[in-house]
Image (cartoon, rainbow, N blue to C red; front, side):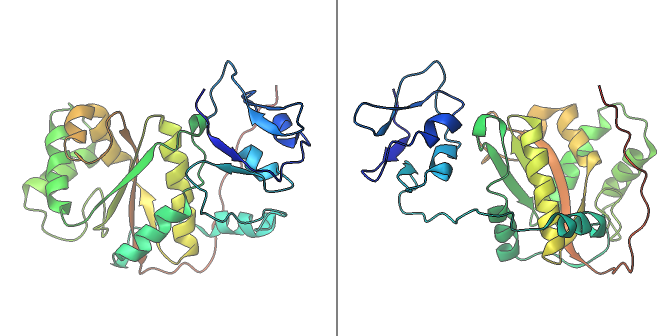
Length: 263
């Protein structure tokens, strides 16, 4: 059995960690100390045991020197979060791109985004210096995909024409592309939407690009050849054009209520 936890002598054997563990990886021994045990399931390092321990006796291996923040109450009120949802808009007109520090701050802020079995297998790439090369790469893939949508034709013509003019049919004024890669599609999508909301809160913004993602779906292997530094086995599942918006919106606009079926 691989040990994933450090359990200190301050453990009082209360069993809170045992109750929260969905993997059956913990038990309280005769010495009234929690310990890791063999189980049909492996520990996937969710950290719930560490989070509920009243004595701070459990630490995930590899994070011994990292101080965790207490979580007593939700740090954001529901009304404030709902207002952020209403405030957030897709942005396509930009004053400037984000700095490297701003991008790194965004990526760091979403390290807690949930992933399947806590794999945390989400990686990001930022397209900026090689923006034109990437546009040509996507156009070459899409032109062979047999699509008849006018937007794709406009994009291919734009690229073939030398990409003159700032209004790219896929990225508009945006010249900075964030791509999320993962093993499970929802992992990348959740992380990218959290990034979208954080960018809004930080005064940045952008929009999700379905069209660029289509190139990944048409020829995944060829698309991924542009990203040799991304870990093997990950695929592109979310694309976000980002920057500092130049347009300010004065009010929210109505949206349809979501249909709900109770079963």
